[in-house]
Length: 342
Image (cartoon, rainbow, N blue to C red; front, top):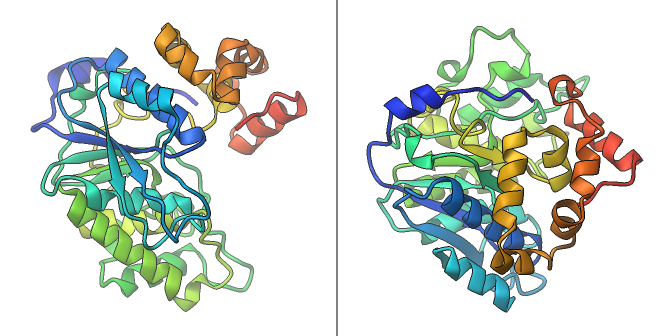
């Protein structure tokens, strides 16, 4: 996917106030991705002067096992990298919908302090302090495909489905539309990837996110019959939250996040297949120090992709200037060669 450039603009603008970062960490894959995120932040944005929180769900009845981070060398690496573990309670989601962690974790953050949430499978690849966040106008990632909704033959179309949700929460639907896009085309409607989002207060944002998500999950409008909410619930509720708080698709100028400053890679085979040389260089550089490398070797996809060269074999399968339009085609090619890991 082509990357926007915005370095010259980045040098002229700066965030108006300090902010915190939060990612989610728990036992398994996410704890290793949290180490990589923290290492990339310190490597590429050494001037970041906020707090980095790794939000960790507490064990409880919502989980089928213990989700907390208990691996000693992972905990040591996170401490070395200046990350603060932030335990939080899971009451609404848990094992049944782990994407809900990003919603419930916000209640544990310091109230009234601006925050940026990142999915843990993200690398910071540039100076985060150059990003001109306006925390009074929340925004989220526009690096997405038209994954939701999928209108049925006899059901309502995009307009009917989305309008039912705006009506549910008393929001103005018309002002959310991109009228440059045609009726019924998914980009006409406010839709984000939940890989990053920001706002002035995590408690305000998080409570509204939770309220909207639970309302949609537990009592969906009739127009949503036939629409899957797993795993899309967070991305269905997110645009409603952002719109209700005065944000939108233009809340952050292009050319920063999902560009030179951050990369939401999602899976290591996808990173090697489609991301820039700079992103690959950052990944391999931050994973290289012995104290970090010995920790990351505990995760098989990182071990094989980064340290044993499988990632470079995936990279050789694709021309970054001429990638397939849809991610599914990229995945299928990697799988057909036997290189897929997650």
